[in-house]
Image (cartoon, rainbow, N blue to C red; front, side, top):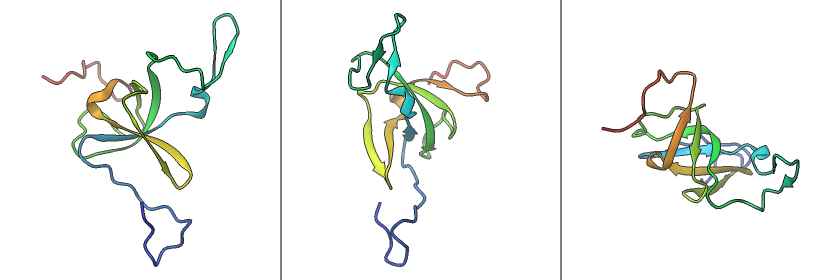
Length: 113
């Protein structure tokens, strides 16, 4: 993202996602977790096969089943990290998302047929 010459540097520009891309933000509290025994597991000790939840911030025009505000389940290895004006986001493909949690979902399977 490059600021236009007439805009102040601190002002945020709108972001439009392209194709089937989804922009998500992982909550900060997701990094650390506590085991059942009460042991604090730091964010740096990530388990390789553990899926993560994130909130959808923006979606591309070809995304069919996900809207802004939904929570999605994804594999942390299938992502691209991006910093936008000091905020950390992830870019995912819709096909790399395993599940969607949303109040608007009506019990459908979410499968593409």
